[in-house]
Image 1 (cartoon, helix red, strand yellow):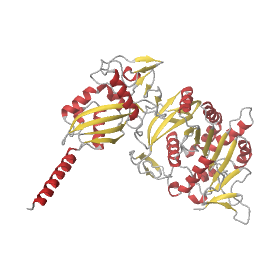
Image 2: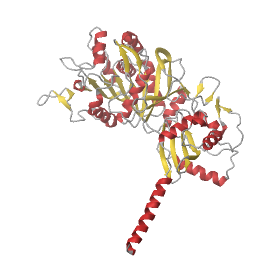
Image 3: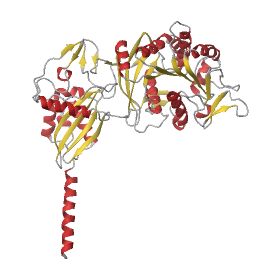
Image 4: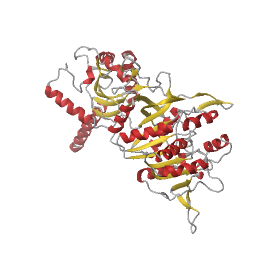
Length: 543
């Protein structure tokens, strides 16, 4: 063989060996393995870890971080963040916490697992990253009761606790590294977080949220699931509550979500009766991650801390259960890519067609609670408040704002957006003039094909509704931007979730209105009617 060919062969062999060796040394652990490890750890069951983890590594990991496992229940997602020749770091999202785990590996197995840092997940995203306690630290101490809430001393004081064997210099470096780590993206970017206020009664069933998290702390009463002392609840019923309950909801939007859709598990029905709902799959369906309540003072304080001084209040319609309202608020927030603060105002609807009259009375009785929410937003420093009211929710918003306009301290808002209002047409015309005094803009989306509205019209004895479009045309009033969206389909913001999927431009129109406050036409699909040369009196959506 010629000498130069021998040199080429030698160089190629070395390069191949180096490449093969590097590839061979790469960690072999995948996201599904990490989630299985996380689940076994939360149960303190090293024997349940996948075979890829060496038995001694599994046992040592669970033993070292045993008292940390209760906080990391509900293993929801794992995403790879850093990969080296013999290690890989994953960001793990739990129901109430997020943490970074490092896996040391050889070519065949995981030899060691360590938790690098963790923090509770909060709406404001302002909790510092902390170094976890380990078996080498001081013995477990009793919890310290501070301000009525039991706080674990291992996480109360910050990243490095008293009793840690690190030097001051090491502690400073660790704090710096944790500060840098806090700049990483949030665990799961498909989480929608928003506030809620409701005058429904709280459900008396135990909390049923994804992952079934265990109580982290207690305060002499109900279980508390987060560092801020807010209490996890299972939800709210359709019964009325004379007081207002407030809190935060976190919802996960599935990977396959289509704009306008509300992906939920299909119901199994027989002769029109719902027998059961199929199992929820977080990758395919909207899922509630947590519902947490607090007192109104702390709620206002948290609202003020978000630094987002533009708010969107969503008021749902007739025949809507609390969880359905939560899903719809999450979908609207996600699809609009709303950058301000969303607040769901959920009034006591029983979520049953047969309870139309009950819902109507509940709506009328919710006007004061609605204005209380608007007042809380002012207290929190919000300078721009928009309201989207759907169906019977307009009975609350329009009448409340109209009555407020006549008081000495009216509650002013920016945009009042009325979607298929299920309100007596004559009452609407009378009330909208008052609401106009405390709003910068009034928009009415009306439709002659909205099924929910047609049902309401039948139940109400055929009395025309403000959101309907009869042959004579929709409601047209000075200062009211009316848009006929009949051609988009048979449902607006309802829960049959198959209409808006192909009508993205309607959501675009709504998004422009919220961002810029511009009058129609905002899109080329929205055109004045009658057409020129006649003077347009309202607008139509033409797909």
